[in-house]
Amino acid sequence: MPAESGPAVQDFYPEHLALCYGCGRLNERGYQLKTRWDGDETVTRFTPEPYHTAVPGVVYGGLLASLVDCHSTATAAAALYRVEGREMDDGGPAHRCVTGTLTVRYVRPTPLGPELEVRGRVVSVEGRRVTVASRLVVASDVTVEVDAVVFEVLENFGATR
Amino acid sequence: MPAESGPAVQDFYPEHLALCYGCGRLNERGYQLKTRWDGDETVTRFTPEPYHTAVPGVVYGGLLASLVDCHSTATAAAALYRVEGREMDDGGPAHRCVTGTLTVRYVRPTPLGPELEVRGRVVSVEGRRVTVASRLVVASDVTVEVDAVVFEVLENFGATR
Figure 1 (tube, each protein chain N blue to C red):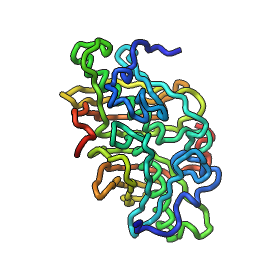
Figure 2: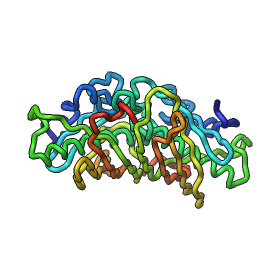
Figure 3: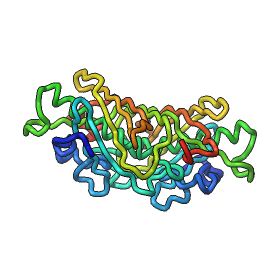
Figure 4: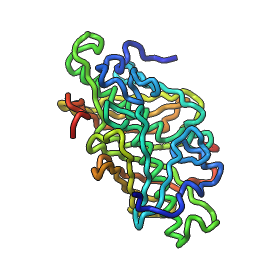
């Protein structure tokens, strides 16, 4: 039973920044990940498909990297609202972040089948730079640990170099 | 024009370890990545689909993490043949590795459209532990830098904890 509740960060991404294959609500081919607060932690859940395999019985590490990537950017965006003393659903300007550096430690194989839970906490917020630490939990075991340095997007992100 | 030639590492993975979503030749839903030597570097190429987007015009970071993950494990396997003074297609036992730690630095947005080229080199081989450094190149620009610590799989990998 999920402990988290409330709005999902990704539901407030501006439309032109809501096409991400991992977490864009407007990407019909994507995973449409959702990230919510659970107290001082953020939570993202996903159940892999049978073909998301690395070796038999084990989830593909690239999928896990994808999950924790989007989870980290969402956690950073969620943190920026809190720093401002705002709720993400207050109708004000939305926060949207992208990853600078992602470090993924695969501490044990992640079993394929059960729902995966990614839990994150905000380590620091320095201007538009947010550091997030997360862990992937399945059936009470931590299988992946993640450190991410994330940046709020500039308005022209992706438009030019 | 690709400079690399010769056999692809993934074509020699044992059948029961050739189901990876990223690089398993037996995963019909996957990317079926192929990694080859080009001198002392390894090369993996992939052209993303239009829906593999992060924000408009930019490739999804989770996909990039997936590419460099499989590229790193393949580079490590390729390195293990060379350490033994073997060719990967000599009919002897095949090498197969999995990622321990993957560090991905997104140094600039990766444009969506052109073919992506991942180039890797072997930093060290210590028993079954291989360190690989790679970069993702698109239209002559490096957009992602990667460090990976990779391990040759044990025979019972994934079968138990």
